[in-house]
Image (cartoon, rainbow, N blue to C red):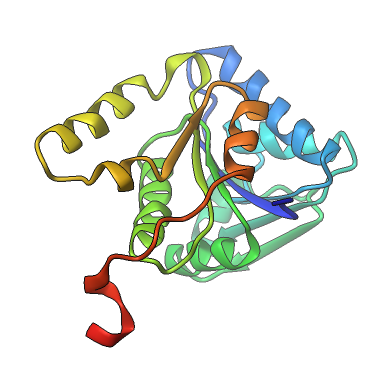
Length: 195
């Protein structure tokens, strides 16, 4: 599969490790060189700004989606190809889903976690068949990956559903996994016949 657009979830702050900003910029750069449109949260600060700047510096197409109330906090990126202002967070996530063929989470906080877990849950429920991946920069997601394994070990997450969340240490590795991703069949209890 060749992606035309990928949504990237990430922090609106830079964090304490400069490598996160460098790698976020590199993700934007890579997507631009692959002619993949970057869809992201619309901010010009933190890792959000870095990923957008990386794409823009390489003539990439960048679509930002930002709620009006966050436009002043996250400071909407005026240099993007298209900055779409929406009324609330739900509209932001719905539109980012509609505009994207895949999802990648870079390092981030609560917002990033909420976004990535919502889209992986939608996938688990069969609402989409798009790949969802974690870019595990410098082991940022190691503890989360271990926690997900614990969910499987205690019987609260199926192994098949754990494997839906793809993990890569480089953008190239992650995109390779995403390109060969096949969504699992929706469980029988979620089929239309039973609804």
